[in-house]
Length: 501
Ligand code: MN
Image (cartoon, rainbow, N blue to C red; front, side):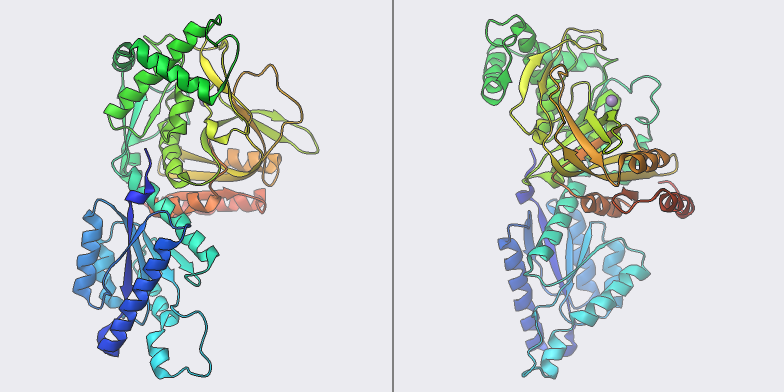
């Protein structure tokens, strides 16, 4: 359901007429070579579209206006091959509403020492053309990404590719629909928030549905649909004896398949990109949707439990960024600590809903009792998340603004088997250590829900916040509590100068 190849970024080259037609022809040719190289690079996830060199205020404003309304255009990459007097760009930058990457590169890598003359100098002026362009963006207080380096370098291509994934997630978020089955878990604070402000800030809309609306879709599921979905389960997972054909809990697995099929058709028909459930709102459902939620997340849907629409939308955005990259991304909750003095860790899980994309092994499919929810025993996939570096990200509503908090983590192998724990889980060590991480997270008001990713780094989330104009806090190996508190206090002043949208 996520296809980055259908998206385009427009490559825009800045110059001026001062240098004559020959120079402009050369600029155009060089710009096309860079675009061709970007399109060939495996790091670049979307199509890069070359646009004619811009040399006048009118052509710049017109192109930016077209970018705003083009359905497939996720943003602009701008490059100053030569000097391009930046007052020409004011009108265009004033109207541009899409994400903007200022690519500060130079067509030739090295100076040809023996041959360099004034013609060469005039043609290859990115070094100061890019600074003139940078000034006007800063003067106009425009959020944009700046990437510096040679356009053929792998590291630079990776940086451009990562930003394009973020721009793609932003594009995907505009007009996205998140469905809520029921409301928030009663009396929970952090999953609340201003849906109007979220729509203005992030572009997605959140709408509630009664469980009866979903039950109609579940009731319409046929026996043959259930049989073929269970064949899929049998191919993808290790089924316990209880849920195998003829097993004692086979009927409950069929019920879980029916719930998945009903949810899928509801979400597909409504064009939803994410959804929430709530174990307190299950009227008409015989099980809490566990397996269904896990499998829908795997396919790219955003999800938040207990009505948590902010996390559902964030997970969807991070699924878009993640598309095609190794490593998974999932809804997560800090569940239990292991307070080993040598290495304190967090056991992350949820009642059921963790996405199998982070699994280190083939998941086990089983039916087990659930202590809460007052329903029949639900189906779930059971696995342990694979070791390696990752991040957890949370978005909270502070009343006057949204705040994103990211913590770098390292997932580790549990020191022993967990034979009696029938849910998906992952054990991680937060950076710089559990004590500092949890102190900072709690002081910042971070939620117990988060998005966990082993595919993305913190810079993806930072770039997303930059595009959205949202506060971003990082807890990593360099975090100290006294410095973190200063950042919280300074941000309080900074954001108090801005009206809530
Ligand atoms: Mn929860």
